[in-house]
Image (cartoon, rainbow, N blue to C red):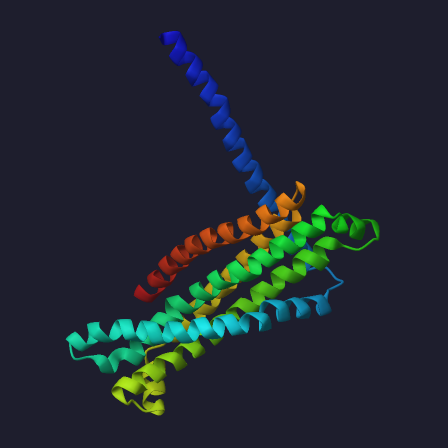
Amino acid sequence: MDSTNTNQATSEKPVVSGRLDKIFLNLSDVASFITHFFREVLVPPYEGREIIRQCYEVGVRSLPLLSLTGFITGIVFTNQSRPSLATFGATSWLPSLIAIALVRALSPLVTALIAAGRVGSNIGAELGSMRVTEQIDAMEVSATNPFKFLVVSRVLATTITIPILSLYFSLVGMLGSYLNVHQNEETSFLTFIEQFFSSITFLDINSAVIKATVFGFTIGVVGCYKGYHSSKGTEGVGRAANSAVVTSMFIIFIEELLILQIVNAIRAS
């Protein structure tokens, strides 16, 4: 019995150590990838036209989905909050509550999750297919820097565009909330706007922009990393797209928690 247990323990140790080695190697590759990005983004030439095109792909093409989602979010959150406030006779606080919820939490997070599903998967699939079909290798042979053209432009586009989309989401959500409040409480638009912005501070806006910027950078880096290192044919392309979405969302939730703790500490000080 002792020899059997000893053999099982020794057989499990290589498996565990192998998994740990793989995790640390992946972390090393990601750190090297991010370092390469910052090194390339500071060195000319700059792919301005490609960055603008990617901003259009990330931003403008996401507007219909974000508009619908933001509008519905504003209506639904207002409907859900009204009964709780009505219990205390405080339905007049609805605009302030919606403002705090949208600006502080919902807008950056929901925008990032939608972008991770739409943009992250597109980036992973696009770069993965280019890697599998050896288009990236062809760019390297033709004296073109594929990392700067493909990776840097996309990461910059997501980093720039996601904060703008987050603010747009807040405005659309505010409009949906106003229509619901006006229908039920007959609140005027000027009164709603005054109450909406009276509860928002510069710290709320700055933290929301910072969160959205970090989320955008995460979506771009993860999507590009998964696609740029894709392999195993068409199966690898699908795996890269799926992994880009799942990994981005997981990291976004961790970043949301960390940034929230920092902002709360600043607000309390």
